[in-house]
Image 1 (cartoon, helix red, strand yellow):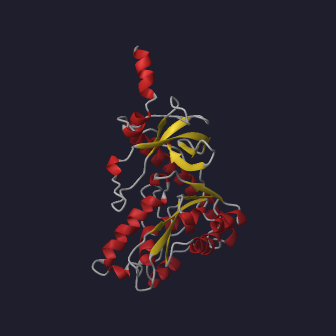
Image 2 (cartoon, one colour):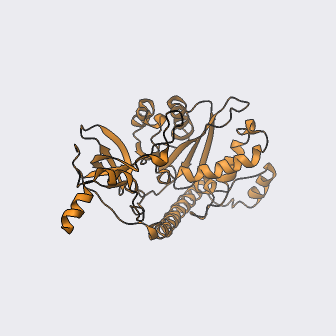
Image 3 (cartoon, rainbow, N blue to C red):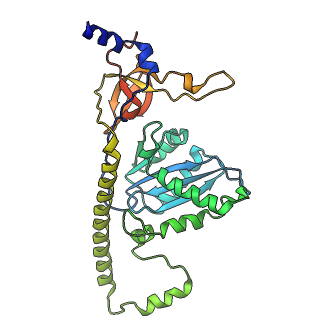
Length: 326
């Protein structure tokens, strides 16, 4: 009887939809692809909408290099695929080189054919993060810093939010990164940022003029190799520290292709239609695991095979005891 009762309760759709899981979130910390040089992997995201500025801008596109932590900020009038593609091509591809990977969320601009065509043209791969899982995008952390700095400048007149973006980006690029141990500017150019023009004469006076151009190139090349190796070690140490903290209160859960799962319901309250998110089902589905994307992310589909997005394992729970057509 105990086994029959347990089986009956597991198959109850109402219980599965309405009852939250009172357990630690599923999924341990994943790992990043190995990156060994600047601009090999970047992440990007839009900030906004913000108050329309005096220049007509409403959004800001933030681009961050994963290896060096170098940051670019571009104000735009509208967050469209056209503006995204133009900025990425001109400010990244044609300036710093084409990255191997681009990490971004599932915004319509990032999913657009125009942006995907641009990346196909330059043979760079797009890695989309799971829905409602912003921490997988390294640019989200940068966004928090940028928004804090913008709010510190604008104060009472928020229409001037885009007037100091380059100064903000410069401040981030020239500050020592806790993760790498160096400033992003130094990692990219092998020298620190020069704040004023009169500092150049000190650098000229201290320069070793006995070095031939060939020896100077060799020294710089060896120095960059050593610098990049140090940064790789520092990135690995930082990731390991974060992993230990992240995994403290999480549990490993894995699914196989074909498994049935419930998905966390992300419905929002809608007063017009008399819908309150607190009274809505906690889970919807069940759906089927179509394929595994990353260590803890899966692509879902409905019984007809239609794609239902990429989701992190923390938003899923097993539904193998319930038939898809129940």
